Image (cartoon, rainbow, N blue to C red; front, side, top):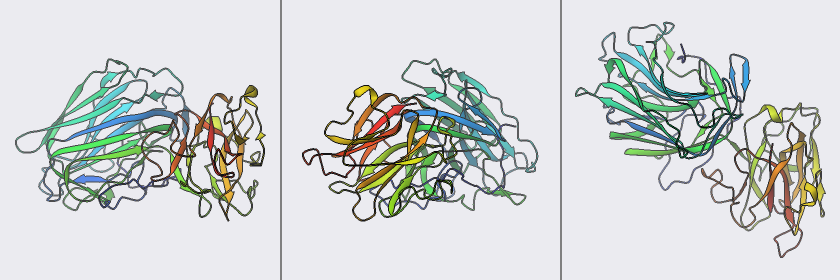
Amino acid sequence: MRFVHTAVAFMLSTGFVLVSIADAHAQATPPIPLGSDSNYTLANNNCQPLTGVKVTLNVTQDIVVASADCGGTVTQGTGNAGFSMQLNANGPATGLTSSQLNWQQFVIEVNQQVDGFSQQWANNSKDSAPPIAPNPQFMGAPNVAQTNPLTIPAGTTFTWLLTTDSHDNVTQATYEARDNLGTPYETVSTKMTEPTPILTLQLDIVGWSDLCEATFQSGAGTITYSAANALTAEAHIPSCAVSQAFGLEYITGETSTSSYGTLPTGSSTTFTQEFFTSTVGVFRNGDFGYPGNAPPSLGDWAVGDYKGECALGAPMYGVSRVPGQLWSEDVECGAAQAAYGNSGTECYARAVRSDDNRGDMDNGTDWDPGSYKTECAADEYVAGISQASGNGVLTSVLCCPASVTHKSCDSQVFYNGDSAAYAAPDWDVGYYKGQCRAGQYVAGISTPAFTSIGTPGAAHALLCCTP
């Protein structure tokens, strides 16, 4: 059995922080937390069966899989370090025959190969009984499947199409994959063993197999849902749909470090939602990630200052700043990865000074002329940043040891606007965002040395390097 439904309470160990997405409409109340196997439920206000369902996931930033944890066995890079995209559907709470389906999964699984398959639970099955067996259909191998880590490139799309009969029963699921590299993906279909109407949809980006957790290094894009009848975004499964059997709630047992954007209230035949894999936290008016993300042995590495700190072993990907002010606003953190693993005891604060304070000179390269540069050593990464609580002047960066080589570095200036590498989704609406390219990490930060460059003490540019 590849995927399970479980009553185990959802626990999120990666510290997701919800990101506010600007929208002209009121936002629907999201499930809490909004990430991994906890996404909105799409349903019809009148509890009508959903027909003409099409769901498309569009990758706008490379999805990079750092590792997978399947029952305590951790796999990094290739092998079983994959993920799955599960379109989960619930049938009506009443009116089903004993053999019709009360819960279904329409799954695209990504690993060394891409498979599409459907998995169904019959109305008369006990929760502990195995589901109706899936029949995986081979769609093709990812173009970059042999790289380490596994990467699904930006420009890839995955599509689900559900076919219904004259009684609004789902009879077939069709799976498609496309990319900009000409990968020869095949479109495949599976027929339902017992055609059954569905009343809800929920798309979850999670681990690739039973109870697996996928850890992403990067990834972002959009999910577009459409149906012939109007949909609404719900925080919970509506009472007209099956949500429990034998006292156990139907929920997928796989998890990941994915997060989802908010959806508006009201009805529509089409919704578009953002997804992303980073954690974002505010440190302008207080600490983010401290002391929870730091081992007690490290202590307060920036006494009296506001600290933005990523989880232990998680690299920093970005920093945002308030337009026209000294203050920085948010830090953007990746997921914990083996390359950045450390105990935290060897981390230290490197002060932001009125001169350069560089742990590596980059072969004499001045990566931000006219600014003072604070840079960790070649075998270190930036895990945190601090600013003075009184005025927002940058005071230090937290450097931690890692298995990195500090190569292929570039500067990402964000003093007067978003940096060149910034890519949607917008993880800090209304603020200037400095963001590293996919696969890079923050190795340093600069602040203007002259007023002709900007206000001294404010964030000016990030140094981003490849591990």
